[in-house]
Image 1 (tube, rainbow, N blue to C red):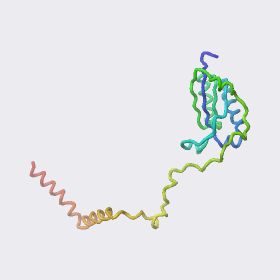
Image 2 (tube, rainbow, N blue to C red):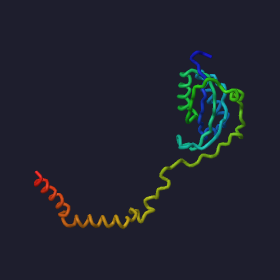
Image 3 (cartoon, helix red, strand yellow):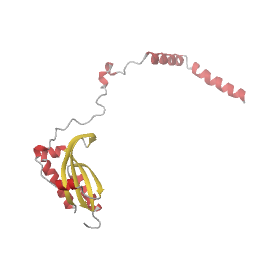
Image 4 (cartoon, rainbow, N blue to C red):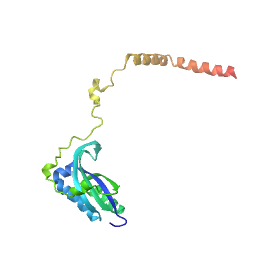
Amino acid sequence: MNDNDYIYQAMFMLDNGEVRDQGFNAVRDWVKATLEKHGAEVKVLRHWRESQLAYPIQGNTRSTYLLGYLQASQQTVSKAKAEMYLLGPVIRMLVLKEEEIPAAELALGIADVADTDVAVPDEEPEFDPFADEPEADEFDGGAAPEAKPEVKAEAKTAAKAEGEGGKAAEKPAAAATESTKSDS
């Protein structure tokens, strides 16, 4: 182990479309090759799970997770991460520095998994935050919904005051000015 090398735990979130099209092993091998190309020594790389995301990421609502342990320098990790985001099926990546690789994980290593054992469901429709809002033509002729009775009464009172030439609105302002003059 080089003085500048550290042990890292890495979690890769993979694009399910890529996993479905290419197969899990091909995508895993691409991640491994990219890490090794930049100088990382990959110790463990295994399927962790496939699940729904808390929120859509790049149009994906589900992802396949790949768990790995590697030995590399900080620069190696940065370069590999940049390439994965630009070119590959990795939509997110979390890398944490570790003291050592757990023995149970080290025993798993990088074993092939039958692509049929990695179930990747079809993608759900893209998330639409406005899906529950009614369309404009669902209202009465495209007009706004009817106002509540108390709102109508307030609107009539305001319209009546304006209809009197605005004199009702001007009186309080004039009275306020006169009271200010008498106070001085």
